[in-house]
Image (cartoon, rainbow, N blue to C red):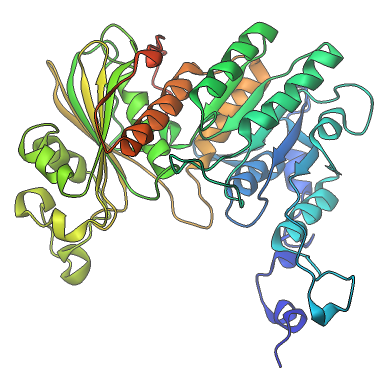
Length: 447
């Protein structure tokens, strides 16, 4: 019988080996740090430290470094503490006798404990302990919070109730009690609730600490290397995304927003949204609600079109051929109307594509189209761009781009899911009058 113990012993790439010292030595990373610069001590907070999770991939960027601009970059950042939200207690099983519970050693336990032993940081029982490193006062210079996956309940809109706001509030309580606040990064959306997200932004402003949030897509490489000219007039835009609702759609909306915010007049907020599904998506394209021409341009940048391409290698225009309705499982269109009249649509096209792409018609520049590049597993190299921006905030105490981008995107997603709940009707969104000016510099990875 192949027991779990024997299986782990025979496996060549078990979690234990991934943290085994000869295979993952910290010495080169430590030696490469610039000793002339101050070291930023950070607390890592999360709920899923397992292979391939965002918490694992981004934390490891700060433990061992990451490839950046044709070199191996080791940031002057030291992880000094980590809090991993405990999983629910395992069920009592008769095989373990009365009053006993099943062993619950997991991949997460092995990886986080292994990293802690390897890099000499503290595993903490709660968030205040992580921020104070077991002492009585705030003992870190910055916070990295990544809450994803996990067995959380859903609300009536189908949103996963990730406790990102709760993590943030616990940190804020420490900041206020100890009289000092530090830079805070929140991975992905700020909250499932726009009101909670607004509260997070206003709290950061009140306590005067930099708050940054969002995903890797806005700062990853683009194929081709292109951006919306700053201050240009966008006539219409189409974004293509893939993946599950209430996660991949947020990433796609944020990628869309990092392009839209560069338009003439700056960001003015969103006037209305409507989430269409099923055959209504294709009917909206036929009626001109979203541009088939721009969808074709966006998909021309994809390296992962499905259909005939994966069957016999044949290149194809999925839009012109009319095969999209046969390929796409559960199509969805997130239709956005901005306060300045600009229209944009996110199309979630699972089954027809596997890339995130964008196209826009820009006055004086014609059509601009690009792919937001995601490197293959296991290295997930596209998160290096995000790690670089997080590092920049930690070291300069200034977020490289406005938190209002993620605030607006979080609100867009909640509003679209509200539209879905209301039988996919168009809804007005006066609460999404979020105004801000994006930086003129293009901040995505360029080399």
